[in-house]
Amino acid sequence: MGLKESLAKLSMINIKRGEVLFKEGVPSNGAMFFLFEGQLDIYKQIEGKHIKLRSILPGEFFGEMAIINNSPRAASIVVVSETAKLGIINRTTFVQMSQESPEFLFLLLKKVIERLYETDGKIRAIKRQQDEDSIVAKITSASNGSSAENAEGDGSETPPDPFVENETPVGE
Image 1 (tube, rainbow, N blue to C red):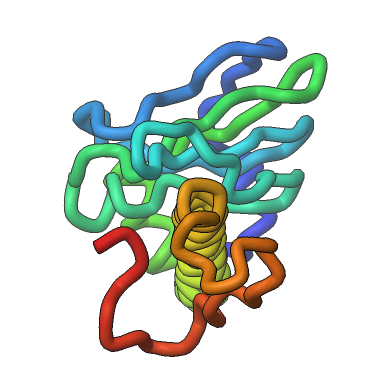
Image 2 (cartoon, rainbow, N blue to C red):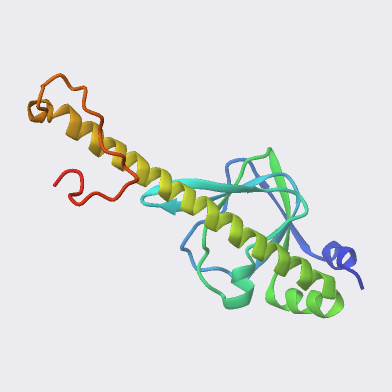
């Protein structure tokens, strides 16, 4: 049996715009999903803010960590289309699909690796931006309060390059 036939046998659920399929950190129910119709967004809490990592589009699997190690959900999933149609893949179905369709495991592994690279890159970019914003805020704050420290007092001194390591960190 091929992948298409296996997917056709899945239990289906329909959910509406704005509904949360699952929340980051909650125990998983041991199920992963296949999106047949609609669009979902993935959110991860980073430093107290929910950041959209990416969208899930029709034809994608997600939630596989629940099958592999029954870990808590790593992110939150929200429906952004009018409705979404999902197939539920529990552990028994997962094992059956793996045995009947070796291409299923290959596609899943390939997608998981792609997502790891993509998500890691996005998280690094978000943290880099936050660090840059913090440095700019410190420089702006230091330059606004330090006009008396300028030798000429005209504020024309160029602030230090935030990407060059200084012997004395800004703000100390």
